[in-house]
Image 1 (spheres, helix red, strand yellow):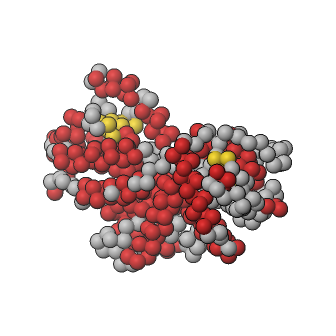
Image 2 (cartoon, rainbow, N blue to C red):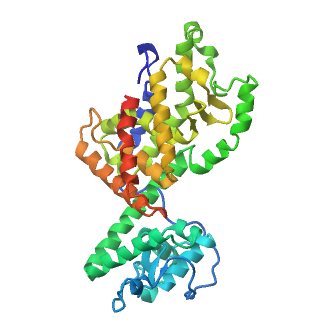
Length: 415
């Protein structure tokens, strides 16, 4: 970071050091998610029969349209005969209707068994929780239900996928291996998303609520109200020279203001499956060198490039004048450049969470002792992000590459 020695950003060691305590105090299997991936309390659902109605969604009978009249491609959820591409995957009418109802009625299911029930044609109504989880695991898109009819481009893409699938039908063993892998990736993605929702103060819902107050915040700033200093900061205890030096004062305020985010990033990392299996020294190294990068990812939606403004909260704003007092114009130029690029990608909460996990699990950090273990964990999160992006309703074949291309700027800015 481009600051003078006396004002350089230093990761709060007491926060990071505390993060490693749990690694020595527990013998649990840290590869498992710390969250229960069950649904909320089950809503009363009386309709358990299959829904045979044909909706607008999906590409109806696309196998026939593609010239595959004599071919029977199985439903990716239950294995029954599929009727076409629905919500992004080959699915039967029953699973299509079940998924649509679940999304439109916002039904929460709960498994009364092991939480990992096998879903086949003959028993698909037995456990709605596991059936819905499998719908998501094989790639059914919630967004497709909300949007409705597919575009012509998506239709053509689905027809091409049908031709690819029909060229080499899956064997039973191949299907079992694929379903197992899809469920592993889905479960890992859900664990990362839940960690993000529990620890991040800048989820999409919270950011939208904050941005709705932007006009009133700007009015307070224009009226002369000082929102640079967070209400929780007591700078009366600082040394006189720290308060009199404008640059040092600005950097101290900045470090105090982002302290809560420091703790949230540590908690997020500790919740990542596999993180606590790393050596404690490697955990500390990853957090020290990766924290500021994750902070940049989290705050990208509230960094207003044109105004040169950072909305940390309703009562805490870093305006242009305050940032200028830090005397690091190149640093902030790079930060706002990165924020603008990330904002243009319009990443979902899941994609942001996975991007943050990938950023933390970087095996090429200086001082890492078990880089292979870190890289293996990062590879799993990369696969999750690749899968999540591929499920988007509006396809962008280069989006995954665009996200990864942000990492060099992220790294160089925080160094």
